Image 1 (cartoon, rainbow over the protein chains, first blue to last red):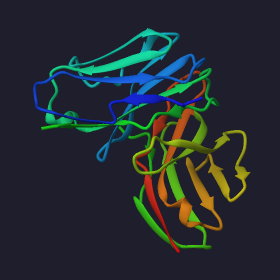
Image 2: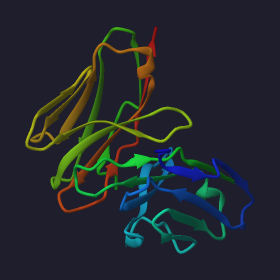
Image 3: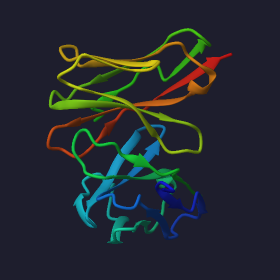
Length: 115
Length: 112
């Protein structure tokens, strides 16, 4: 399996622009997670899906952020409008069956820079 | 509020010596703990875990110790190798809660 795939790997945009990050989870995995990594806060969970349904979006920072999972093999995280403080590395992860003992597999991340 | 804390953000150690990484948590509901390893430009990868019913778990050169009363766990790497140079994240979860809470990470540099 190719693992979790994320695109783009790097994104540079200007403040106010819309940004869309994409993720393809590992085939057969029922859960998909979006994380954000910053120096100040480390790795934060933004939202996760089970069978394409959003389960917990309490980590989404504000209404400018939205996430969708239209099917089992694709998810997007959108920021509109983007701000410089959104600059971070965004990771997508998937797991087969979430319990406290199931491993999450991470993609390589998207490094977002908002100027 | 950071429920999982990793102090001493960086550690340098000679090849062959022991690396010890520490992690403290505040949520008494956490019952499962994990360490992830991250290389530059890659996502974190699972390294080792421990359930709260145990106080030690060993996998090759990696051992995790859990002290529930102190809400503290540590990762020991012995002997350290240059390929161990990476950022290590401590994470925790509570039974019935699908969220993983991560620490900010520790940078480990193994000097050949």
